[in-house]
Length: 266
Image (cartoon, rainbow, N blue to C red; front, side, top):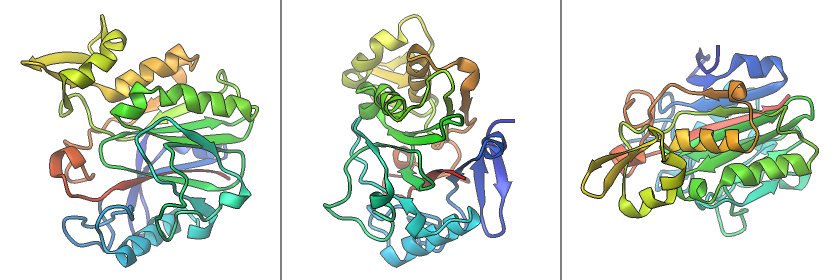
């Protein structure tokens, strides 16, 4: 089945029913069903954009209520487009859920073996969900082009292994992100992925020193290189820039909101 749109009581969101059967709750929000005003209308979940913080907190409550979770049960970090990954323990529970500031962990990946919800924010970058159902470990990564170039995939898999997880048992899901149809980069970015894309359709020249880039595809390639089985990777069939009806897109809109990616072991 893979990714499915679930019709909730108040909002719709994407999920993977098979992961729930394994004891892992996974979700990706849409842009609809919240209280934020334009240009963040309406289910913006990020406090770091210039939206009204009270509206964002209400949106987070709406989203998490659908998932049967409280703000205090989760963590959100300050995403910095890098490759740092942290382990989330009980002491970090509730961090970043009601305010942002310099004390938030600055990283783009989280891993935990505890019943703590991991929440990240996206508007084109690649959401990467990880689950080792046998070891009871889950993880979430934010992979923009910088994090991808610095191989955040490798870093989060190493962190999962350090907690007793196994790459062979690891399941990975890629949430909605910008597709190569809408993601054009310059020579300076394209050069970083030339070796990965060689002999593939992951990058194509679109004009003078301009290239389309399949950022999700690059991450899939690296996941497989690290030992993830191709059949254990689920990819959402959506481009965030194409689907204005469903998603925010920084590339399309500039000033806009963020969707939330959520994962929690039951």
